[in-house]
Amino acid sequence: MANPRILVTRPAHQAEGQAELLAGLGLDPVQLPLLEITPVSESDPGFALLKSRIMDLDLYHSVIFISANAVTAGMDLIDQYWPQLPVGIQWLAIGRQTAIQLEAYGITALQSAAGYDSEALLSLPQLQQVGEQRILIMRGAGGRETLAQQLSQRGARVDYADLYRRSLPPYTSGQISSTIGDKPFAAVLLTSGEALNNLTKLISEHGLKTLQRTTLVVPSERVARIANELGYTRVITASGPDNQAMAETVLSTIDMDDRT
Image (cartoon, rainbow, N blue to C red):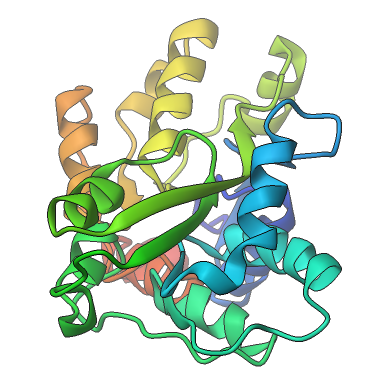
C-alpha cells in the first residue's frame, strides 16, 4: 500500500525540513506552501519607519521576536546598522524554534514554557510590570495585535518593526491540479491561522472539496477554533508548531495498517 500522503503548507524555505522528517517516518509529503514571505525592501514605503526602529534599538528595554522568519529578517537588518549588539536589552521569543534561531546569532532569549503564542509569552513574570518601558515587536506586517494591546494596557510603550509581508503564492489551476491531483491526503499540516485562511481560499477558488473533509493538524487551540468556525470538522491540535511535534501528531492520527 502506498505511504499516506501529507500536505505540507509551510513557506517554501521552511517546508523542506518538515518534508524530509515526514518522509523518514514512512509518509509521503507533498509541498504546497500557503504563505510566501517577502522581506521589506528599501523601495517599500514602510522601510523608512522600519529603519528608524532598528537604528533606535538601544532605546528599547525589550525586543520581542514573533517567529523564526522575524529573526532571519530582523537580524539581517540589525547586523547592517549595529556591528555590535546594544547592551541592556531583554530579548524575548515566541516559541522554541524562534529562540533557537536567535541562539545562532548569540542571543539568549526568554521564552514561555506555557505555549507557543502571544498569550503564553504574556504570562512571563518579566512582562507583568512594564509601565513606561519601551518594547519593540519584530514581526511580519499585519500580524496579530494581542501582544501589543496587552502590553500597552500594562503601561508599556510598544512599537512594531514590520520586517516582511506574507501572501498566498499565485497558484494557477494547473499547478494546483498537478500538486494535489485526485489522490486523497491523510492529513494537512497548518502552522498558522493565516495559512488556514489561505487554504480555505484555495478550496473555494479551485473546488477542492476533499481537502475540506481532510484531517487538519494545527499548532494551537486558537487555530483549531478558527478551523471549526470555518466549517472544518476533523481538526487535531499538535503540542506545538515545530516539525517534530507536528510529525508526531500526524503519526498518532494514522492507523498503523495504513503505513504498512
